[in-house]
Amino acid sequence: MALPDSPENNTSDYIDEEEIIAVFVPDHLAGERLDKVLAQLVPQHSRNRLKTWIEDGFVTIAGQVPKIRYAAQAGDHIVVIPQASDEEQAYVPEDIPLDIVYEDSEILVIHKPAGMVVHPANGNWSGTLLNGLLYRYPQIASVPRAGIVHRLDKDTSGLLMVAKTLEAQTDLVRQLQSRQVIRRYLALAWGQVRSQTVHSPIGRDPRDRLKMALITGSAGKPAVTHVELLEMGAFNKAKVSLVACRLETGRTHQIRVHLESLGNALVGDPVYKKKNPADASILEFSRGGQALHAAVLGIKHPKTKEELLWQAPMPEDMKELALRLNVPEGALWPDWESLNV
Image (tube, rainbow, N blue to C red; front, top):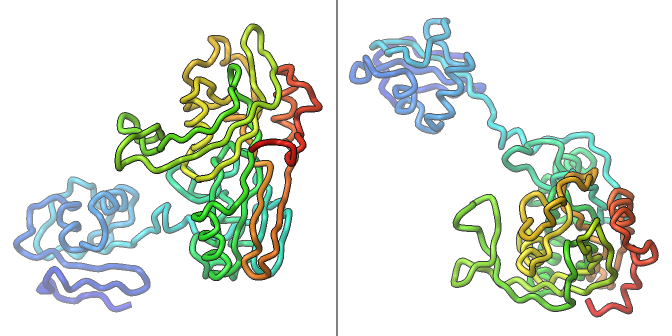
């Protein structure tokens, strides 16, 4: 690899070969802190990222690792070895077991377990469904988001569709947008839920950017959830409802936000928990999150146009929880055709 051999190179004369960058410090930056100098000489990388590389020893001056507060000298020969960010490392194949419910040349239907993140994001850059898809189906890397059409929250279990081709993904997204996709969920909620349809826009909570909330005005996106009470249970003196929910729209945390707005937060939900019983925290639930399961998924096949429907029984952890909450076992798998949702 060729490196600069003269300190007279200006700020644009850096070398980026084999991902190694080499620069010389010009006179006008002499005396400045090293991270500030690099922010000007290597503007394609953020100052925060450069600071991290300095601290981690991926920046050298004359072969030595400097301190971040080092005052640069005119003519200093700085070598930077860029490191991939978490985001850049996210799209790597990983050998992760996938529960494939249906597969053909165009689509996949997967039963996602609770605890699996669908798409890499802050705090979850590996071990996701996307990583598993890239390992099992390398060709799916050419499809945006590795073919993922919609998502389930980390601690929500159930059915999820994935497109193997761009054409299939485009068609399935259009089906979602036109509300043709059938998505039915089973949930356990505190209190006695009244069967109803909730029409309440959802958006980012202005007081807590990690949460969603009911939002009026342009910041709120239309959200419609149909809710039907299936059976009642109890925990100590608190009532518990087994409910079926059907989504017309697919906003982030939609069922969780809508049910909490009714005063019926989901059992186990660590975020949306208004009006939970005082002793709710002693109820152990192995998945560590909300008792919510995507039980039914229906689409029109993007190529054959055949109407397809899949069902996934309530997983054992949620079933055991429901029985501890004294929900009758016979109610845990409803006759979906007889319901109004």
